[in-house]
Amino acid sequence: MTVYLAHYQSPAKADVRGAGVFEFESDARAGSKDNLHDARMKMLEIFGKDAVSWDIERVEKKTAKTETLDGQLTLDFRPEKKRRRRRTKEYW
Image (cartoon, rainbow, N blue to C red; front, top):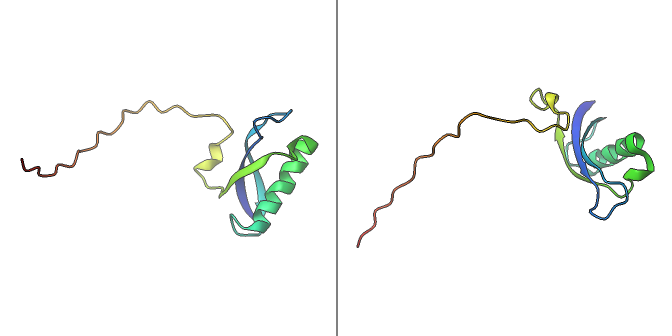
């Protein structure tokens, strides 16, 4: 079985609000109906009846990079790379 990460979010007017990420296992391909069904079943197991109206936004395969993802945003203080502007000849 392959481990996937599912990103979920509740509707704007839901009584119980929720947004985040959880991991689940599935034999189906990422993004297929069976994979989304497995994600929904795992979400209902974890959060119970509150998660019935919640939507699964996307499913991605868990990699070493996403392993540290715990719902917390990471800050990046590295300076931005300056991009070189493309020059086109302008004839006046």
